[in-house]
Amino acid sequence: MLAPLSRWTGAVAVATLWTTVAAGMALTDLRFLDSRPISYLGTDDRTVVLFRVGLLVAAGLLAAFSFFLRSTFSATPSFLVASLVGLVGQVVAAVVPLSGAGAASAVHTAGGLVLGISLPVLMWRFAAGLPRGGWRDTAYRLCWLEVAACVAGVLLSRAGRATIAEIVPALGFHLWIGIVTARSSGVARGSTVPSLTRGG
Image 1 (cartoon, rainbow, N blue to C red):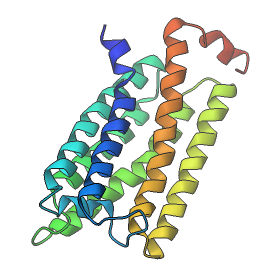
Image 2 (cartoon, one colour; image 1 turned 180 degrees about the horizontal axis):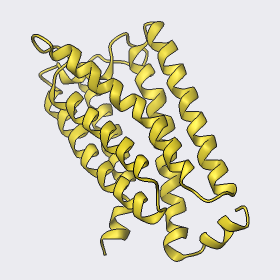
Image 3 (spheres, rainbow, N blue to C red; image 1 turned 45 degrees about the horizontal axis):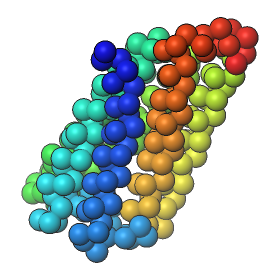
Image 4 (cartoon, rainbow, N blue to C red; image 1 turned 120 degrees about the vertical axis):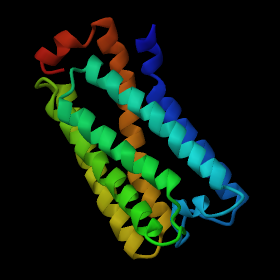
């Protein structure tokens, strides 16, 4: 009963993040090409609760999704570790405000960096645990796409476009979630295991 529900936790997490971020941007003057990061929503009285709840709910859903993928695809333990470490970073970024006193800003930034670095790492470890074949090749291509998205994010950030710099890597990760979710349906039915051994 739980497995079919867990399959969709990643997609629900993505929907939660985009809904809360879009709502926060609508309530403030934050724009896609802004010089301020999305974390600005956690410093505005109008959106701070929305920002925190969105990140925390999504973190819980993505943790469930990670355990589901670990079970469904027999992913390596390092995949689960990378995913959970990244989600700890997400929780830290949610509860420690960017504009907080003392070391709060540095702690928030560190949490965001841990989350960002974890994305290509967990995708790499996921791909590494798959049997040789077309699906494994696709997983590696998605990993390299995320690496490219992270590099683009760094360049955009240096160009003073902090908002879109955070969105681009997120898009790559959310694409991965969608594709893996779709693939997991076939694995659950037992239809993809033979194709993996044939290169599919």
